[in-house]
Length: 557
Image 1 (cartoon, rainbow, N blue to C red):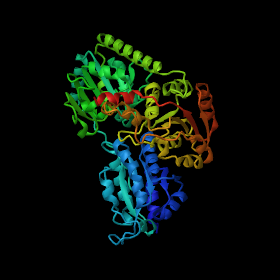
Image 2: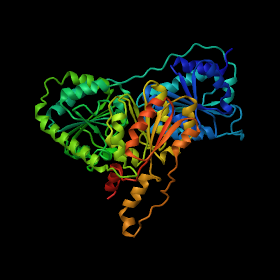
Image 3: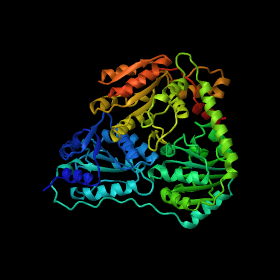
Image 4: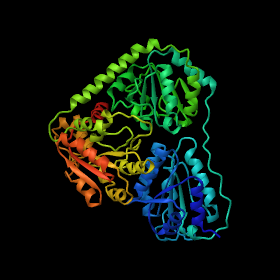
């Protein structure tokens, strides 16, 4: 008879799983041996949360659930931040934890913990299988929950004795199916009517466009409708920022031209994007209060959550855009040319302002760093953005050029997460570069994953801006009007050492170099991309308030 581990791993393979993101522990020894024997690739990390972040990153890149497998107790609790990040992002990962023996509940067994309670508020579904023979059933339920409706993480805690138990052979379960509702034709006709009457429409595309695999449909739709597009979240790059109808980030904190456009628009078509804090919760500070809003989302709870809608459409975005494009032939686009000219003029002025912020002094200004780097970053590179002022300058300046090649932390803004996400990008796309942008603050959270990159031969390029501080918090403290009024000029708990993170990478077996001058940047990037090794470029920068921090201060007034 097969063991529970064999049943468990064969079911994962039946569902198309090829990689497990893990950190070894007592609860997992049996199942990990079987996984290795059955040909799954084990990516063992240095912190369990990194395993969850990598599974999340894998899911975002492949549109297939990523699987993390960690031990129970503290291994389980360590993974929680990664699971919470996936939940906020809407990423279909399967978070599996080992746990104490099935017969020792409530008896103070080793590493005993109420693991399900800790996960219920952070996942779409969480459960403990009642017996080993039901592992395939619970795995199928987990995958089905993860991929249907709004994607998201699910959790299973599995008693360790289930993995070693003998179980009767059973037929493999059918692979889970994702069901995506089609739009109502009357809703689409109403959308087209609103669009035909609009003189200043704006399309905002978010992650739902990526999950629906609707990037080509989106490009066709905006071209037929002569409608300007702004992108956000996993929607970045769904249509290239170089397209004449794409105006970059749909986030006013990073794109001041978008802020002006959103104030002037008379119709918003919001596709797979929450009307969340980035859009001012739909309030008048960001979205024109007199504009009509059409929101298309597969998750009905999102529709009209923060702003009254003219038309909610609960449907798959790909199917909605296909149906809408079929009715766009007679729509006039000529009267929108002035609107488009105004938007292009605003976009040009905003980019000029960004360029003007850079100067040639030292330490280097972050804007100068990204202007120097942009020509050397291949279009095929997957760009993974962490948090912090240095990174936000890059998000403003660099353009998103390809679908699925622009990864962010997500709404939870989990600092540090983009290093493990970047490692997942290199795994999913081994022939394409993966570039991680981080600050000296955020890199500290998962710096031990430099070791993971080396051991698993994942040659990510880390562009690290080092200003010796927690940059955003420093700028927010310095910009606080109340603190200035009371004579406060110093910052609290914001200082860091200007450490040589490139030497840390070298000590762990990778490569790196230290950059202090602008003329060193492009050669360093070229060497990093050509090295075939994990590579950290440690750049000495000055602390410079980014447009993101400026926006945060403005919104607090």
